[in-house]
Image (cartoon, rainbow, N blue to C red):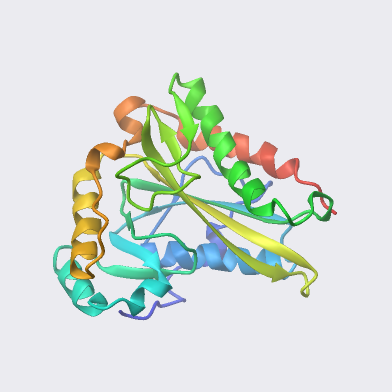
Length: 254
């Protein structure tokens, strides 16, 4: 896979903080968006920022998966075949399973220092709640039936999917690092929200990768839903920026 040109995009311009909320996602390549998330995580770890919020939307396509999957037998052949079909494979630092990225997706990255007062026992659940609950709140405002949980047949299925009307809308993942000179854990919690209906081609790409690598899972397009299938004119970023601003401001700084 080709190396990322780190100088191709002014990553600093992608960050969103409490004084720089945007109602439009940044349009970048998938590689640049993934690197922007990691750079934002690094900035919070160094103490350069208290926290951060990033919305980005791909300008290209890729099938993004955890780095550990590169050790699968058949991985290189799968990469070659998917690249020919327009779904090049990229590796990410968070866990989970293969996730298609394209201009049909809005990515949300929330980064913050875990408060001492909350302890470490439930920090993973707390991070997912800070990402998922504002999404559910906004979806319910628009009359949707929002829930969090697994959906049979969905790609990269998990306990913290955000679901709309019984189908998966948002996939989620986390990455933790020790920050502030090793004194506190810092989390990047990420959500990939399907905005436009590209379910069929996305599921086909995931299933083809699984076939090439002899993985048993097969996904179903009907297990997913795009927001614009339900709320065509939803002012998504405006409402989410407001909701996450409240979430970030409520995190204890201890």
